[in-house]
Every structure is written in C-alpha cells, then in structure tokens.
Length: 435
Picture 1 (cartoon, rainbow, N blue to C red):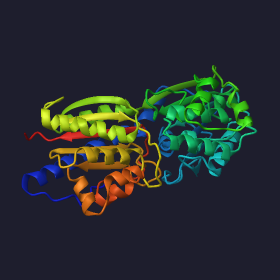
Picture 2 (cartoon, rainbow, N blue to C red; picture 1 turned 90 degrees about the horizontal axis):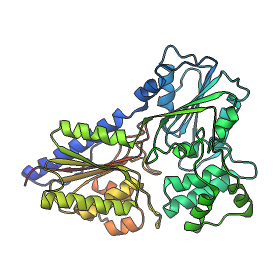
Picture 3 (cartoon, rainbow, N blue to C red; picture 1 turned 135 degrees about the horizontal axis):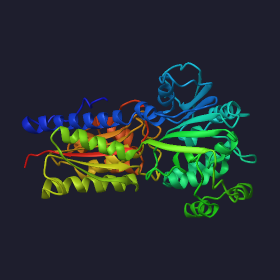
Picture 4 (tube, rainbow, N blue to C red; picture 1 turned 90 degrees about the vertical axis):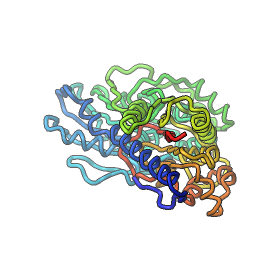
C-alpha cells in the first residue's frame, strides 16, 4: 500500500493531522481488504464437505489463483485436476495439479474463450458422484466466456463495451451478455450434468445476487429476455436480427445439480473497515453498502457529507470514520485514463477543496480500478491546490474522464497492486476531532 510522496506541506499541526489521517486511512483500507482475502473464506466454505467421487476444481475471476491455492492447502482433499482462469497479472505462479490461464478484463479476449473451452473439456463425461468445485470471484463475466453458436466474441465485446461506456451497471450489463454465452446464466452447471457443482463465491455484485456474480454460470437465472431488451432500449444500443433472436431464448430457471455459498462481500469489507477504524479511536458509521450511482455524483455526495461533519458536527461525534461500500459507474464522455474510484475521488476533491481535517479514500478491493494500475484515490483539502500547481484543471479532467493523470499530478493515486480479492469498492471518510 503506497503513500503519496508529494502531499502538500502545510505547517505545524495541520501538516501532522493530514499525514496522520492519510496514514490511518491507508491502514484501514489495507486491513479491511486483508480481512476479505479468499484464503480463509475458501477453507471455511469447505469445512465438513465430503466429495465421494472425483473432484475437479475450476477457479475463475480476479481472485481465482488465491482461491485455488487455498484448496491445495487442505490436506484431506484430493483434486483430480484443476484450471485457474484469471486476469492478466493476477497469477502468482504455478499450482501443483492446475493449469493457469490469464485472460482479458473488463472485455473478454481470445484467451477467455480458449481457457473456457479447456474448462468445458476437463468437465466433460463426468459421473453423477463426481463434483466440480467452482471457485468464483469478480471479473468472471469477462474471463469465463464461450459465445453461443451464431454469436462471435466480437459481438459480445462490442455490446459490453457499449454498455460500459453508457454507464450501465453490472446487473444491466450481465443481464444482456449472459444471454449470449454458452456458460453463463446456469448453462455451465447444465454442461457438467450429471455431476454436481459446488460453488464458493466472493461477491462483487451489490446485494450478492448470485445469478449476476460472474453472470451466474452455475446458478438459475432470474432475469428475462424482456429485461434484456429493455436495457438495450434504455441505452439506445442497436443489435443485429441474429442477436435479437438469441436474446429471445430464455435461460435456465432451475438447476438440480448446483449448490452455492458466499464467503465474502462488500458488507464484510465495510464491517471490517469499521472495526479497524474503531480500534484507532474513530467513531464509526457504515452509511451504506449499496452505493451505486454515477461516480461523479457519488464524489459530490461524499464531499457534502464531509463538509456537514466538519461544519455542523454531524452526523457523528469526531474524530469519525464514515464508511460506504458498493460500486459506482462511469459514463464515458472523454478519452482520458481512470476508473470509477479515481473519478469518485476526483469529484470529492472538488467538494472538499481547502477543507482542513478531512481525508477521503475511494478504492477498489481488487486493486485494479478500471483499466489502470491504481486501486483508486486518496484525497484531502489540499488536493485541488496541488493539482492547480501542477497545471491540472480539475473540471477539465473530470469532463475528459482523466482522473488517473489528475490524481497522479497531485500525488493522490492509491496503488495496492492486485490484492487477490474482489468484493466491490470501499469509500472511507476520515474527519479529525479538532474543532
């Protein structure tokens, strides 16, 4: 967890306060993420489980490598063979008995299809007593992909790209793209019949909707074709007649060979952040775990909470930590570089400009915010002035969706590297106790 090395240098107590708040914020973020790493969750999910036949392991998502490694560490489990399918840069080396495949995110690529094809082949011809242990984490919708006959990878990529750029949320995106896939929306569970699928899931979907986490490969689909067409109409996305015909085909609504448990979510991330902040002497409040608006709107809202706290001494007694979890969206209008957490932080920086005693961090728990190497941003009342000194126009950066370069210029990027987990995003507002 890095710390910005070019924070502005106010004098005396104010400088010490900024440094302390930023240090505390980074400690809270790091501790909360560590608490939702998949290792213990996988072990906990497998406690007492008995697999009478052969056991095959499929690990898909940004946390796939660590989840698979946790299975190998359990001495009483005998794994016949396994495959890890994860995002580029998220593998940490070989795992005995597993093939490791890295593929594209947030858009699928050829490796996504090739890796998925290998998984399908590994799980063909299984018997009823056999089990596929399916370890699932965020990013799976992109990584685990094999288009239905008549659909190309380009079709799925173009539609996903359009939905992302329009600001569609993950539920809307997955409602459409799951219907174009041969392994999503419960179809993977159907492919491995008569064997059973036991899924252990790290949730990256607000509300832990299992049919939308990685597009629900082994869970009955609760969405409908009507909803998919409504989403396309909402965002004015035109598709070919062929794609329309495939979208009309309903997905599996019942499965008889699938069991699923959730071992981590944004709720546990926020709860752990609250515990750590409290141990550091902050009064804490988890304001929400379902934040899901535009990133710019979220940043403005978060800044208004900080101002209310510092100017009106509410909603909490200070020093305080106000915590939010969820996943915002970005409506792309420019061609800059950034991610939803960086854009949230940049918008919040505008709202707390020159406000002393406040630090705000917005971070993706997976450590990779959008297509960047940053997890998010950590800002304070001096962020805007540091940007201005570096020749950065904050409003122009927001309009160009260029939060990465703006935060880099002020020293406010928050970088963790890939964390090995993915349970949505954490926003932390720390307010000093000084009147």
